[in-house]
Amino acid sequence: MSNDFRLGGDLLINRIGFGAMRLPTNSFHGPARDPETGRAVLRRAVELGVNHIDTAAFYASGDGTVRANTLIREALHPYPADLVIATKVGPVRTPDGGLAATTNAADLRPLVEENLEALGVDRLDLVYLRIGGMEPPPHGESVGERFEALAALREEGLIRHLGLSHVDTGHLAEARAIAPVVAVQNHFHAAKRDDTKLLAACEEAGIAFVPYFPLGGGISDLTDDRMAKVADRHDATVPQVALAWLLASSPVTLAIPGTGSLAHLEENTAAGSVPLSREDLSDLA
Image (cartoon, rainbow, N blue to C red; front, side, top):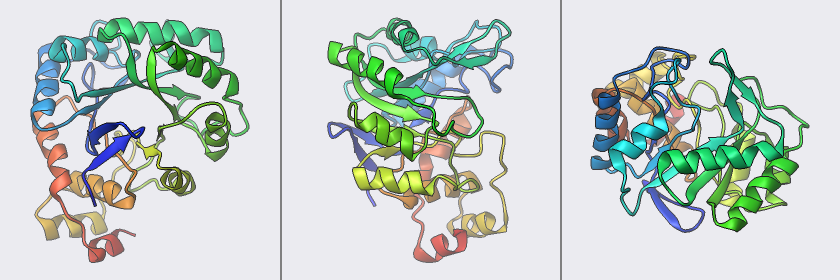
């Protein structure tokens, strides 16, 4: 299976990318991390062949002093010609440092403009419409008005491609009737596989499926006897096997492991070289 994917039919990217959420802080509401370390991680990621970075304007330390988009611009601008930066809009920071999901389509333009300015670009490569929080996707909630607002910004040239985050198959069908969807980002990993129907719909349509928290996000422990067995077989780590399993699950899956550590970055990007056999996949089924 190829380690490359053509996003939206025109952007060739490495299937192992990088998630920027942990650059400003190790936990969502946590204290700021050293920004120079974050910049070093980003530069090293590009050196290792990463050309797909997933970010958001609300990825920031609890006090707001360190922000992922700022680190990306400081470390990598002017950007390599093949670098694809994906961001998401919908959630906004609340005064207490939490997140609230906007349901007002008129709120999306300022959020897109915030990302444009912070990243220092005239057009965003990929913008996800994120709905809801960490609870299960809100079934039955329409995404039409909000997705139409983003589609209009795409027509203006502010966005190249559109995606959806934290959705179900109904949301995907509704959005695709409005404008092309090139990527879906949901909570999915080796220990959380309840979105297989959505993954199948994406595979059938050639839409990238880009799970957030591909290594559990500190919420799920992916280590079990099956994972450890396959990891020992390949002289690899459990996180590497988890990422390799994700890539082997479908030709449309992309991995965006996030870290603020250079050592973990090296480990994660090496997962693309772990070839899982039929026996391995059977053991992990």
